[in-house]
Amino acid sequence: MSGGRQRHREPVDVHLIARRDTVTGPEVLLSRRAGDVYASGLWHLPSGHLDGPHEDVVDALIREAVEETGIVVDRADVRFAVTVHHRGPGGRARIGLFFEVRAWRGSPVIREPEVCDAMGWHRLDALPSPMVAYCRAGLDAYRTGRPMAVHFQEPDDPIAYSSAADRLDCLPAVTDPAVGRPTPDVREFAERAVGRVVEWADASWAREGSRVWRVRGAAGGTWFVKTHHNERFHQREVRAYRTWTPALRAAAPRLVAADAVLRTIVVTALPGRPLYGAVLSAGEERRVFHGIGALARLIHRNTAPTARGPAVDRAERHLAAAEAHLAPGDAEFVRSLVERAGRPAPLECVQTHGDLQLRNILRADDGTLAVIDFERSEPGPAIRDLVRLSDAWAGRPELYEAFLAGYGRTLTRPEQERLALEAALDSVSGIQYGTAHGDPELVERGRRTLARLRAQSLIPVPAAPERGGTP
Image 1 (cartoon, one colour):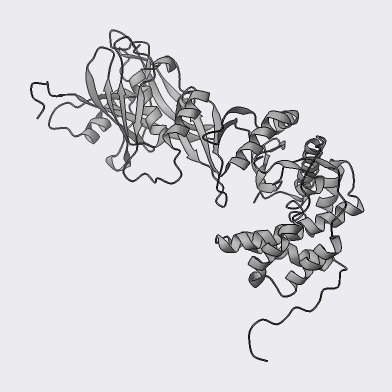
Image 2 (cartoon, rainbow, N blue to C red):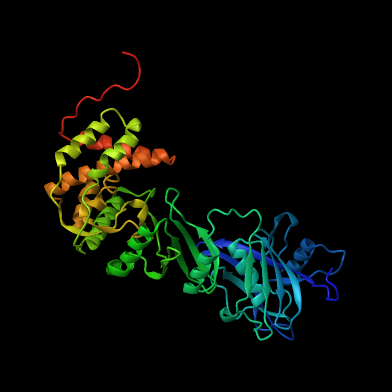
């Protein structure tokens, strides 16, 4: 029991989120209050109270839609979106139920001109101002996908939404998956950097340990928040952003904030989609690889003093773990490459991306390219960045030539030999990792690369010993 405390008797109101999807993003229908009413001059969703005990919340929504906008909504097209427990600056509380509707009959018009002087469609990520803070809270909660929110304003807060007095608190549902959501301290760090975040979308690559979220801010703007798998990855990426990636200008994200304890960064979002899986014409492909070559040239013009050599010291360990999953003769071929290389002469060291492949290169609608994901960046020979790209132009000499044209030079003979060695070692490592972590695509890519390298090589390979079976 609550003792002598006053019990809540909040009124219930309903809010219509009439939504339409456009080429520029989703839009919602808003009206501007006018006349001698509460919050006059502020934008709001079509809304209202229940008429009485005879009316349920869905009936009330359908009635308000007709009365305020003239559109006719069928009960079957109403979807529950979010509940907001709201308290206004005056201290009175209420329960708001927000419903999404994507289908209706008729066109919206102003049906109550005495209390509404404007009505129109507005982008969900660019809501108008001034707007009723209560309504803005419901839409911001809706954008997060959270079904419940508390919005208790303080006595001095304005009725209109203000980012300086944002009281929204979204609660997760019991069905929300724990995996893929940022921890509270990561959320707090991100919001200190960019302001309140209204939408977190998991954008992590399936096979990576690091977590990535695409976030949208309450006042507009999009960023990426990334929590690194380990301290080494964090240090590499932060160092890249603080030293040499600014020279790439618009072709790389900009670091907004970094936290070494959380191993988390916030970076700006760039336009475009990853090239991995993109369907392009032959001419577009050549232009893309020419652009990739130009990007690589920009990265590699930053010289570096030291670098590790090829992973020959780890070759036998990776071979031992992967040998059972290699094609006959693959292990012997790799050992022949390692033996032939011995201790290869050092190549000039430059800054390298470390994981330059199509999924880490974005292509915007106007064809411009940008590169992302620098957690494997470290000094090394330039050919380190060609290892995974070489799979993309395999069997396509015109794409390789386009890359070299953009790169501005051809590879030297020592670089070509080192590229074959690095590609073979990377393939074995990928097969080992893919087998251990259930990633058949990574295994197949490694096998495909080894088969290609063997077909191109003039190194005689000893016959592979037979496995299993009876003589």
